Image (cartoon, rainbow, N blue to C red; front, side, top):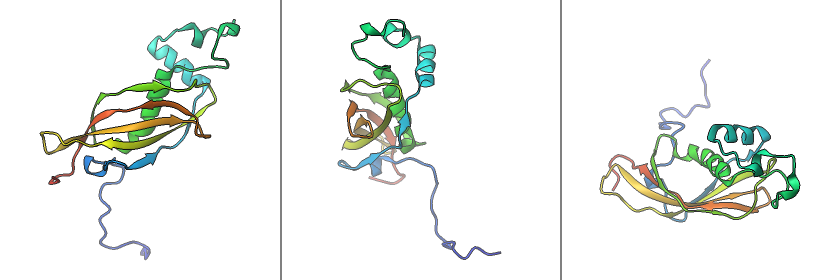
Length: 163
C-alpha cells in the first residue's frame, strides 16, 4: 500500500544531529527535558568518582547537615545537566573548552532539573569548519528556582561552505 501522506521528494537531512555553529545565533534560547535525581544516581556518582564527603554518604547523624534533606553534589548536577544538553550538540560538538559555574541553591534527591540555555556569544575560529559558542545554561527546578548557572565555551562544527 502506498503512503499518500509522505512528502515526495523532500530531503529532511540527517535526523538526530545537533545544532551547528551557524544555528547558535546570540540570543537564541532553548530548554531541555527534565530529569529527576534519584538515590541511585547519588550512589552511582559517589561510587564512580570516590566523592565520599560525609554530607553525601553518612545518614547516621543528619543533625549536623546545615543544608537539610538529602543533598546531592553540585558537580553531579552539573554533569547531569550536561547530559540533558548533549542532544543539542549530537555529532556537532567538538570540544568542551571552559566554563564558569555558580551554585545558587541546594539540590536534593527527588528534585527534577531542567536546563534553560541561551547563546551569549559565537566567535568564529581560524578554521572555517568550526567555531566557538558560549551559552549561559541555567539549571532550574520546575518552579523556576535557579540551582546552577554555568557558561560553557565549546568548539562546534560549522556547516560546509558557510562563512
